[in-house]
Image 1 (cartoon, one colour):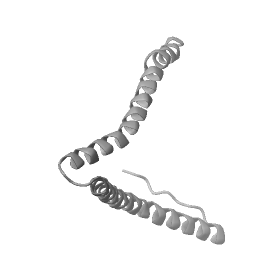
Image 2 (tube, helix red, strand yellow):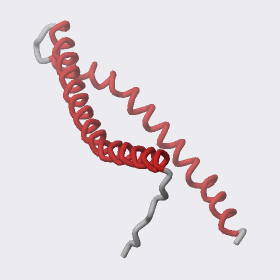
Image 3 (tube, rainbow, N blue to C red):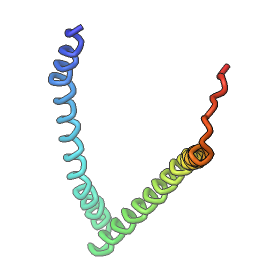
Image 4 (cartoon, rainbow, N blue to C red):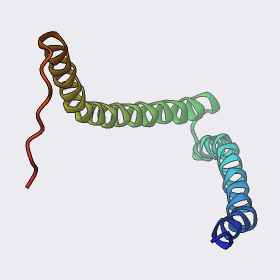
Length: 115
């Protein structure tokens, strides 16, 4: 049985760690490319005939609108997940109330058989 943990350790050192490094490097490069892409778009708009400040302003406004829409979308998804935890909070409150009643009355909790 000692072979399995050793195999997992080898797998982690030979596959997972290098893959994580490559993923991290790709994320850094992708993040560094975003400003360059935005500048290239603004310069392309400028080449189409608009002034420099207007080209960069258009790119900035569009980028901010996209960021705002993504933020609203993320907030809606976060609220949907937090609503799921509402049931857990209610169940926890019910369990605490039950335990308090048991502690006050000194009765035992009787579990019904599950079929």
